[in-house]
Structures are given as C-alpha cells and as structure tokens.
Length: 250
Image 1: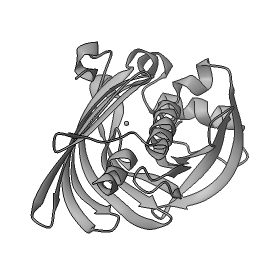
Image 2: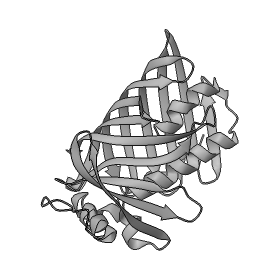
Image 3: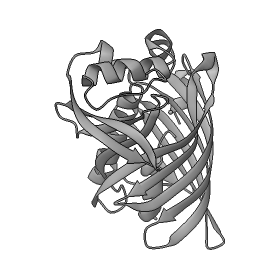
Image 4: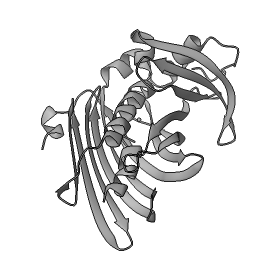
C-alpha cells in the first residue's frame, strides 16, 4: 500500500515583462520581473492559501499507469490537505494526507499509514518547493541565495533559469518563460515517499489561465521523474487569502 504514496507526495498541491528575460540579467532582476508577471508582490503576499481540483494519469511504481482525481487545500507555510483517489486495475484507492505544522496524518482506504523518514523528507521538500514557487519570499525574506542557471528550453520554448539555495534545503531551479515571464518549470531533487529513492523531479506548467485578481494559475501540468513522464494533470486552481484551520484537522 505504501507504494501508492509516491504519486501523492509527488503531486502535492498542484500553484517579468513581455519583452523577455536575458541570460545576462541579474538573478534578482529575473525574479522581480517574474513576480510582476505572476500578479505582483502585494497580491502574492496576501494570497497565502489555495485550493485545486486535479484529474489525470499517474505512474504508480510497481503497478503502472493509473487514473486519479485529487482535491488539494493548503495554507502557507505548513498546512496541507490532500485527498487523492486512484483507479488501479479496477480497484479504487483513496489516500488522505493531512499536514498541520509538525503533525502529519496519512490514511489509505481508511487505514493509517506510518509516516516513514522518506515520507517526511518528501513532504519537507514539497513544502519548501511550494514556498519558493510563490516567489514573494525570494524578494521579501532573507536566507535565499539566488544564482543564474542560464538559458534553457522547456517544452521547446526559450526559458531562463535561476537556482535558489537555502540553508538546510535542497537547491531548486526555477525556469521562466522568456516571452511571458511565468514559471515554465520547477526542477529539484527529492525522494519518493514509497521507496525512499532519490529522484530528479521536473514540474512543467504547460498551460496557465487567469485566476483571482488577474493572477495566472496553472491549468495543465506535467511531472517527470528522472526524465520519464510520471504525472499528467489538468487543474482547476484558485488562490485564497486563508482557509479555516479546521480544514487541516481530522
């Protein structure tokens, strides 16, 4: 049963000017432009929570491809509720994950799942990735070191990457579309919750739509593990100022 936790922990929380970004730009300037493209510093700082309904296909290690539906609610910095239903070989599997500060609870079809060190590491990496992906912390908070990764291609489109380093956390590379300034890909190393194996995860936003207050939100997402397609999802996401704390309790 723990093998089905891998897709859950890897799919958590499915969240610049049009003149383009240059590889010669200062990384702080690249981030500043990207913040503007994503709605602006004030709006991003205010909207600390979000909800999304996701559907798609996922690869379950040791089993194969499965269809899934997922309801996610989160509130930065440390609250998450993830309800995922998998359809695997005619069997339905429902996994509920609740994270509230240091408290973590996972159930699969009503049975409690032990939170192993691998799961805790995967959740820690996911929380850090979610915060970095919101961008505003990179311009408002200390403790982040930015360096230019350089130009790259994401889904055939020109992008520029910025590496984000923070003490006690794995590096994350954010790739921004040179046309729009929006995040095109998030790349970081993490572990599979079910196996504990270290992997390179790429989260590629293939399509955005305009959400609350004119802020772009992901609509179509592709996740790769070690270069292989792991998850494809269509998302119905919205950003919120807050969610009642009771949502993240049993």
